[in-house]
Length: 140
Image 1 (cartoon, rainbow, N blue to C red):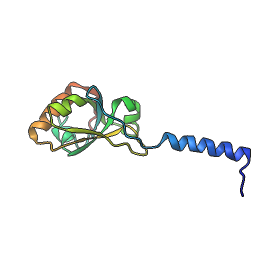
Image 2 (cartoon, helix red, strand yellow; image 1 turned 60 degrees about the horizontal axis):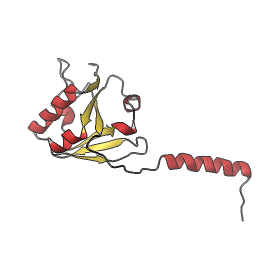
Image 3 (tube, one colour; image 1 turned 120 degrees about the vertical axis):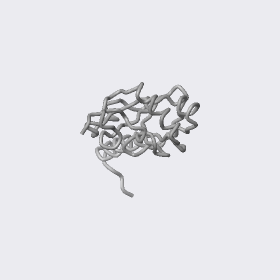
Image 4 (cartoon, rainbow, N blue to C red; image 1 turned 30 degrees about the vertical axis):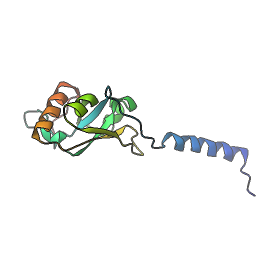
């Protein structure tokens, strides 16, 4: 039987702790939560600088759950992108969307806003996003 040395056991324990911190445990999303949506300056920004409703058209729109991340973490690697905050209660009640926590290995805050987004819904979400801009996108 193989018995690891004390040094190896310490390394294995540290590795286990690191792995455990990345376990993809889903959390409950509450009505008082907010989600952050990145705004791509190439595809989601109009020539006049306004955010297009196309930023909110994906039936499984990718977002980050605000309480599980920071603005800095959400924006890391997305130079020039904008960021808006959307209230979960608004998305559920006024836009008939589901908000689901779907963590990724590299992003435990990852969540989806799921539902068909007809023009009226996209416009509602766009108006809310325009009222809650956290980082203004930079035109390319």
